[in-house]
Amino acid sequence: MPPQTPILLLKTKSSPHDGYEDYFSTNGYTPSFIPVLEHRFHTENLASVRELFASGAFNTDTTTTTPDNGSKEASVCKKKYGGMIFTSQRAVEAFAEMIEQKGLPFHPSQSTPLPLYTVGPATARALAPLRDTYLPTATIHGADAGNGHNLAHLILDHYNALQLQLQLQLRLQQDRPSDADADLGSHKPKPSLLFLVGEQRRDIIPKTLMDTGRPAAERIDVDEIVVYETGEMGSFEVDFRDVLRRERQGAGGGPIWVVVFSPSGCEGMLRVLGLGPFKSASASVDRDGDGDGEGRRRDVFVATIGPTTRDFLRERFGFEADVCAERPSPEGIAEGIRRFVDGSGE
Image 1 (tube, rainbow, N blue to C red):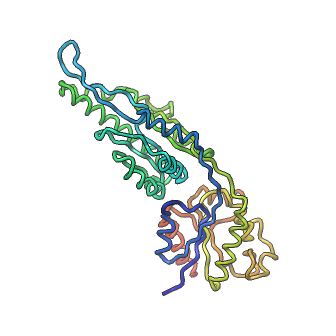
Image 2: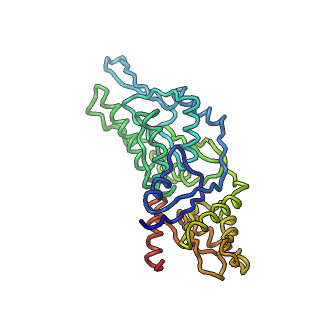
Image 3: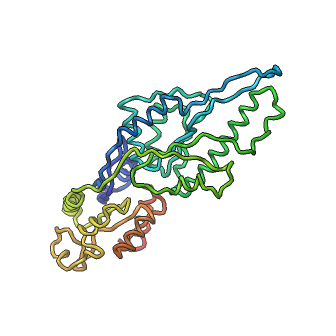
């Protein structure tokens, strides 16, 4: 059996399962996790999310009334939210911790779906156990979106179509089926989406969904609640150096891959590796040292999870990553590495 290739993942290992560990440990790699960021959950804001479920903000109640003309009409008690958005595993973990500690007081109508929108397969996988256990009417969308721009347009298409379908079902419950299609194209207020976010986030999704240049009937209101904050780990460089030294000693001169998931930690990574602006002759003196200077053949290669981090390394530090994944997933990284190895003769 060929030796496993060390792959150092500059991220916090997700719980209870991490898709990157599952994939790489069974596909010829030995994964190690070096956390770059420290995450702190906002307990007060998470409590407010729980209270939204308890107060019925996600419920739709259909009632039947009898107007003066004797006909029966169905009406819906307006709910505040018709779905949720998650664009990070940390937001899912914060939501999960709240549920596991406090429970989720939610008794949805079995006929009304609750869409959960996510960007990327890892976040979708993290959501699936919560959906199965606590949100039986929920459906997960966006695992293949790839980025916030694509997810926003997926939401516009899917959520607006879903709301039109629910309007149609409501009218079919009335005694005037011939009017079922009436007014479906007109603007009717729709429930907002709840977006659980970190303290630092891009606003492309809310801006796209609430864009005033879009027809009013297509706009979707979004409420953001910050459920975690992030700061760089003070011990990152020390931890990274220790893991790198250990893997170099065990790799026997074979390649080691480092995967970068965000601009955070890029400077520390390059400093430890002696790459980019930190390249120096002294970095290459000791084979068991930390640098990858010009004095010897490189044994450490860098992959980024996507173009944002690749461009940050390029523009800020003048460093060109060896691989940029075309898809932000374990499979995307592995495919990029395979192409690099096949093309370089490594």
